[in-house]
Image (tube, rainbow over all chains, first blue to last red; front, side, top):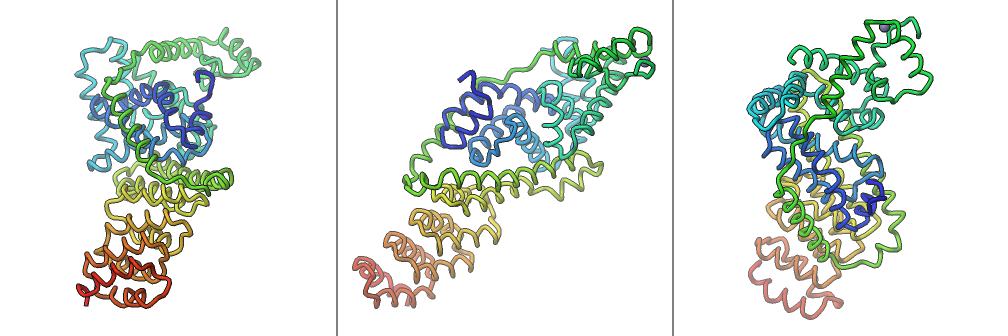
Length: 174
Length: 263
Ligand SMILES: [Zn+2]
């Protein structure tokens, strides 16, 4: 199974081989969790939302459209995050505050960890999200463009601009 | 390029994701430009921090909950009666479904993209509050139109996702109950609709279905539900069924037993 791409596996899942979802879970659940944790700073919430993402993969398996699996997965993750905050009548500003506070409290982080997370938290959530997807999840510019409803060129420029801003914040605080 | 600053290309330069020619150009520029050198050094420090960042690990609970959900889904799949139609049309049907679903997903991701770009996030969020539901609804409606009967059943079963299904969902389910050629689809549509018997539309659909339905198991189910909700308008179509020659004897018995309670 190692050799099969995510896309080929998901295609088989969509056709009814549900057990193969375990392979995709193994490959990706930590990444989804990491993305959500870095967006919210809340471990329990991130676990619940990760659970929700994979639950949706099970449910909506037949609507997989053969595109990049990772983009699809993170589109679902972003959707779950947004739905959660909508349901709780919070805005993205609240995400920012929440993340900032709880990550400050985290004791099990290395110094570098904390510096980087603090710098990330000072980005507007929509910028932070883009950087997390591009740097941690290694989602390519054209896939990001598809996810964000933008063009690869525009996304590339945006990522570069945010990285510069983040770098300033990061070096200021170190 | 040799004499122009390369600030905007530095992240990609450090990623090594540029073509050879551009990489060389940047190197040549860096050799003689302290400003870009400084920028490169700083950016390298940031990118290194990303690489050495420790990723938090979720608890094992996550895996066990996922496996539970997966087993539950597999168990519920087993309940669907295998349908011969599925195999014949699979390829064609699945590609049509894919097109429909990819449109649904595209719409959803486009909306999300634009939301994240807006400043007036609150306002946007209020507008898109039901987006997730929209996505489900689109998926449900497109599944119900699928060539494959088991996909249509899957579509009908999505009803569980909706607390308050709107009129278009009810109509689509009604359409399945009244017009689907497959018995299992009609039965599933009936079961889905029977949760909403307080709706006038649903009551009327049941009465109409009782006049059209030829499958005895579905006839029985409809009769029982109409009696349960004491729908007086059901008496007429029931009497008609009594008069019809092709009505199964046990259906006639059933009607004779319940008719007095409606009249
Ligand atoms: Zn320069």
